[in-house]
Image (cartoon, rainbow, N blue to C red; front, top):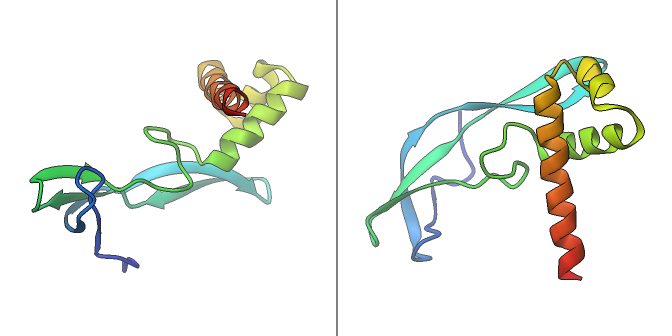
Length: 118
């Protein structure tokens, strides 16, 4: 696998040149395609900054921190729960009630924060 960047900017000291230390792929659930469940095998790269001597993990623009679903999938689930029950969405998406409720609560809190910033 080849990446666009082998070095990135350290979020702690803003120095460019963090060195790649390890790559641990994770599975991220995305929107279904043609009725098939889709998981993205996404590299989760961890870097070491020689300047501030700290480790950090690359942030992915399409996944919120410590989440296992893409932002667009979570938005889709949130919209579905507004028009159907959590139980129905749970059955349709093959996720537990707690997972659907967690996605809904996460999206609700994000939207609430956005409204508060306006």
